[in-house]
Length: 480
Image 1: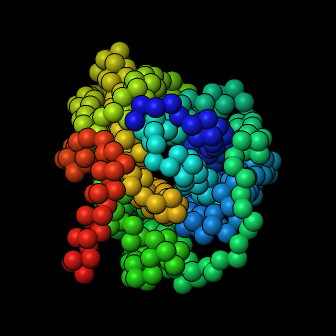
Image 2: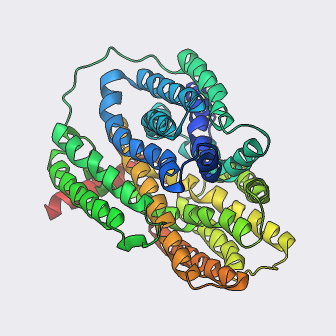
Image 3: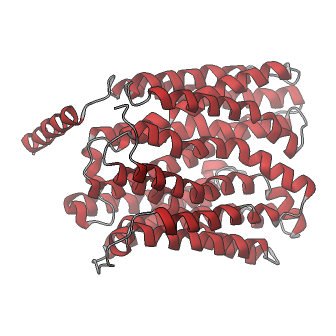
């Protein structure tokens, strides 16, 4: 479990990581620029919000296709196509002349970015073949943790000193370097194959995800879940996704995405925790910059800089985790990480307008320690015991649930904050509204602590994992 990593695995990991960093940082960098874009492009927030919404909806279209495209084209070809598409979209966004053109080019970005994230995990896990999964996850997961933390800092610096178009030029060096490294180091693909596409599954799942993500993206507006543009697309999305599940389960690998893999215990337990992480971890990341700007009166750049201690904590925890993760079971690492994150969120749930800033910086550092350790064991545990051909679909399922968890979490916390703030007439009452939202984030993190007990306490050897999978298969067959 502590053996040296195969050089081929190392090369693949770093090759895809460099390209993937462009996508991981882009979303959070652009998120802080919405108000600036609205002002510079002379449009309302309701229009410019589509810069983020269009990107998000494009993910819902492209992510379900990753498995079929990879099997048809090959992982290396698809990776370079997706990264090239993201590069083209980034350059076009930087050259956009008005809001509609920027929104259209963000959709191009989203189509490429949606394929990159699940494909990145798939390629690395397939070449690793079950070895050193924890160490690999610590490398791949580093920018996943740092993106929401450093992204606002980078975005704030650009908006403070440069034109907003530089928000998208930041992606270009990562994309170009990623394409070069992919061409040199990624394993060669076999010849392309003509495989049947599950058109019924695509017609059900893609618009279902788009409807669900679109509905959730509107929750932060006045009216929250009672708005027609929230509950109608959300309800339609849920119905279509339920119909897809009914279609896909009996078809297994012939379906667009094999959701029957959720019978695999490591996948479903990790995916449930990924979903909850979207509430407790990433939902709270939505609240923190708003707290500093709204209650403490800081500008975008200062709010981003104040999050740096959290990034430092995340970085240090991952450096320490890399040494032990393949020797310690995921239960205790994940449980401890969620517990630390929840406890370090409580001070924000009781903070006021004059809470000592140095105290909050220390708390953010501790919170970063938890954030940096929470997702990594789940990323590695997800793929334990899976056949290599099942990894693409498992990666898609895990990625979708993490994305939906983040969307649900952000939407719910935004609704709670807006509802509590609606009656606030003073700054102190506004701080109380944030307290309520942070308490909800603490509660969801506490729920994740409880679910963490479903994870194994020890790292299973390959033989033990195989025996467990055989026993699980026999149990499923007996129930059938």
